[in-house]
Length: 305
Ligand code: C5P
Image 1 (cartoon, rainbow, N blue to C red):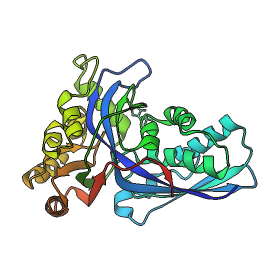
Image 2: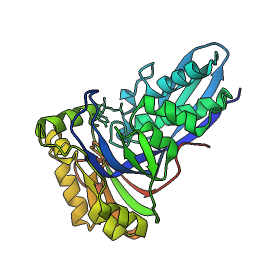
Image 3: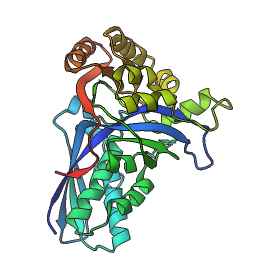
Image 4: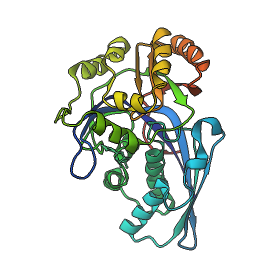
């Protein structure tokens, strides 16, 4: 048993179609995920006893609010380690050390990313030898976005987000992310979605042909026009000031501007590096932005570092 280090990306949703709430409280989704190069790191160090511990650290406190990430059994990375241990009969414990770069409660699946990374790191550190496919089954039990964060790249997400299937895509895209001062609860945004859309939700959300064609062609202009997010109205209803952030990016010439997942991170598509720098500069003085980051996607999913 040896320590293992895993790097895991954040995700964005290029489109996010949301259907009516199911009996289990989740919403059916039709989404295209993209993994972007904003990475958390999880280090798993095996223990001689059976304790599972977690520490969370960040050099970017303004963005990542690590203070609100639990350093106990509520941490999704701890739940991931526990689930893997239960399924494999391992008796050892592990110390998990998380280094956060992905914004906390930012709509970029930071908690799910850490769970995906913990699965890969513990699988290596404990020598449990589960295949990626077997890890994906465990991932789906931990959260809707966790399987995609193992997968990475671009993928279509169905079910409640946990079923991941390949999508034909080419190109590398330049993104700018505007992080808000305070996170938003995914659960609260979905609840607001239900309140606003009572009885009027499309039963079977689908991914648009325009988005799939843009990705197949690797065409950023077409992709910018095809970006969409059904949670926009709900997130803006809880955080009206996000409208200003989106407007600033659009005025700076972004090819497309939407909220990432349930928000509050706003994402902007740029044509190239210089354009991305121009958009980032325009956003950096916006009062609603705690941090502005230039990024690229797609990138691979959770991998040993
Ligand atoms: O799957 P995960 O635990 O990440 O989801 C967090 C919360 O977001 C859920 O408890 C649920 O309230 C909401 N959610 C939803 N429909 C989805 C995914 C998440 O309502 N498809």
